[in-house]
Amino acid sequence: MPDTTAHPRNDAEHRDATDPLASLRTRFVIPDEKLIYLDGNSLGRLSKASLDRVREVVADEWGDRLIRSWNERWQTLPQTVGDYLGQHFLGAAPGQVVVSDSTSVNLYKLASAALDARPGRDVIVSDLNNFPTDRYILEGLAAARGLELKLVEFDELLGPTADQLRAVLDGDGLAGRIALVSLSQVDYRSAALADLAAVNQVVHEAGALVLWDLCHSAGSVPIELDASGTDFAVGCTYKYLNGGPGSPAFLYANASLIDGVRQPIWGWYGQNDQFAMGQGYDPVPSATRFLVGTPQVVGVSLVEAGAQVLAEVGIKPLRDKGVALTEFAIELFDAWLAPLGFTLGSPRDSAVRGSHVSVRHPEAYRICRALIEQDVIPDFRTPDRVRLGMAPATTRFVDVWDAFDAMRRIVETKAYEQIDPTRTDVT
Ligand SMILES: Cc1ncc(COP(=O)(O)O)c(C=O)c1O
Image (cartoon, rainbow, N blue to C red):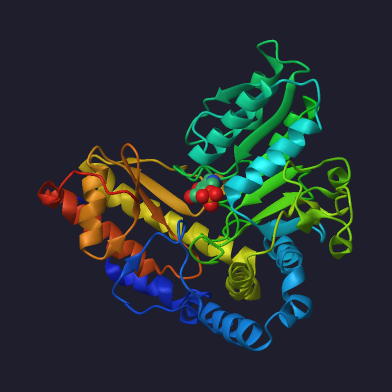
């Protein structure tokens, strides 16, 4: 029987009482205080500022100002919000980030641009267990261009390390053949956090370009795209950045590369002097060239509103809280869940861990469903992971305590055996 006396609930209450970010939660719409939401790494919570902003953009800017709003505000939103994300979350100087389309589409645009910039090279390298959309897009590009997609198996708890990558890039007759290496900074399963600068250096030594997926790091860990020598990056805004369901994604292209690359979709929003309506495509000399069509104004506006709430406190305190929450989760895991047959699916060292923790159990799916029935919302990741996202802005230490206590009870009492094992669409 796991020992619960060593970790009383008032320990979690004390941590909340002394949490310097505790009041940030009041900036969010939380209709049900009893709901334990540990999925902010999948869909971040709604900020009150977003509610105000949606009214403003729909009622005032659209309803009242109508088409005049394009000149007054909307036309440059992808760039201004992109620069804002660059400044506060991505370590990117202005002119390199835009907010548009989805992560998948942005990945396609940038991967394609990178491949064009490395003619004569015929290999793309990625992670065998990279997020599916990344693999499919690279697979499609490789098929369309007759390239080889080399998928490398990295240790799930270490992620793509510079050393392992160097061994791959140096081996197998790959010298001079690699055009692009595309990886995720935080593993969506384990939260293993890759070292951007170290990996970038190895990729550059091989003469290739690097494209990072920052979906699980943006808004939860400090990112230094410029300082780390990153070439390209994409990421979504609906997770830790709280942009809302399906909110437009961001993309980053390093200023040193922009003039020399073109994306595959030559739309008018990437065109110099767009309203001259001229002949021939002549792309803007900034990340604007990666835009395609009319910006999703409501969506981009909500990205800005969500990000502003976090930017007010800054990424460093958010990261510190993310570390404290995940450390606490691992403490409870060791005390309560390890004795019940769970294994830890995330790195123990917070320096190489993002802001979620995965715990593994053969009955993970039914445990997840049982948790949801008790108003504790994590998510399930195949085949055996319960993934618990600790969004630093809104997650309390008591949420972590209550979730682990619930999980412990569900397994101790075998309550999960009452759950139908048929999988739902979104897990
Ligand atoms: C690492 C990663 N990449 C990409 C995506 C999804 O991209 P899109 O917004 O294009 O569906 C996700 C979604 O969860 C993700 O976790």
